[in-house]
Length: 288
Image (tube, rainbow, N blue to C red; front, side, top):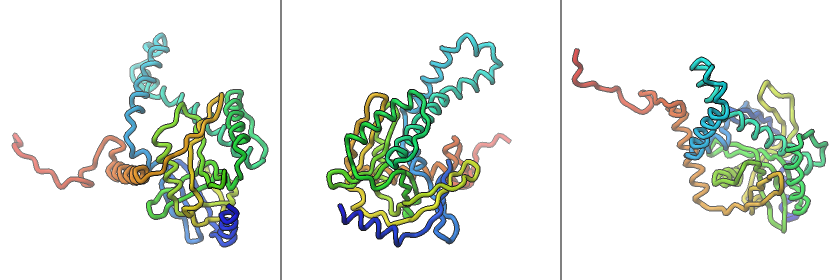
C-alpha cells in the first residue's frame, strides 16, 4: 500500500491545477482553457426507472390529504391541489437536510476539523457513523473526493477513500431508509472515473454554485479495489460491500443514454417535440 500512497503523492506533485464549480445542473472544470461542463452522476441515474418513487409520491399525497382533511377542503381548488402536490417534497427535503448535516460532520471528523452544530437527531446519526469509523481504523487517503469521466461526460463526489486491510476502499455514506441498487450504480460510476480532484480548497460561492480549487490526477484501477455503501442510522452504521460487475457499469452507461434522450427530446417534461424524433406528419381524411 505504500506504493499506492507514493503514487498518489507523485501524481499530486505533477497534477493539473483545476477550478471546479458544482450546482444542481452539474459540474464545470477549468484546467486553464475555460470551463467544461459535465452531468452529475445522479443525473445519469435519473435514466433508471424508479416505479417505487411514483408509489411513494401517491402514498405521500394520500397521507397528507387524510391528515389535513379538516383544512384543505376550505381552500380554493387550485390552492388545495398545489398544496397536496408539494407535500411529498417537504419530507424529502427534511431528510436531505439531515443527510447533508451528517455527511458534513463525518467529513469534518475524519479531517480532524471543527465539527458543525447538529440537531439531536443528526447527532445520533453522526455518533453511529463515528463508531463505524473508529472501529474500522482505516488509513485515510481522502474525504469528499470529486471525480470525473471525460469519455462519458459525468462527474460526482464520493465521501471517503481509505486503505483497509491492504486494500483501497471507496465508501459512500447513506442516511436513507435503506440501501438500493442505484447506490451500487453510483459507486461503480465513481470507480470508473478517469480523473480525481484532490487537495480541494473551497472558494467563495457564486450564488448557489459551489466553487473549489484543487489538483486533478489520473484515477487508476488500483486506487479502488473495494467499494461499499455505509448505511448510517440513528442506532448503527452497516457496511454493504458492492460486488463489481459489468452489469452495473453497462447499466449506468445505458441510464446515461436514456437520460440524454429525455433531455434532448423534452421527455422529462412529458412531451416530445416532433422535429427531434419525427418527420413532418401527414394527415389523411381531413373533413375540410
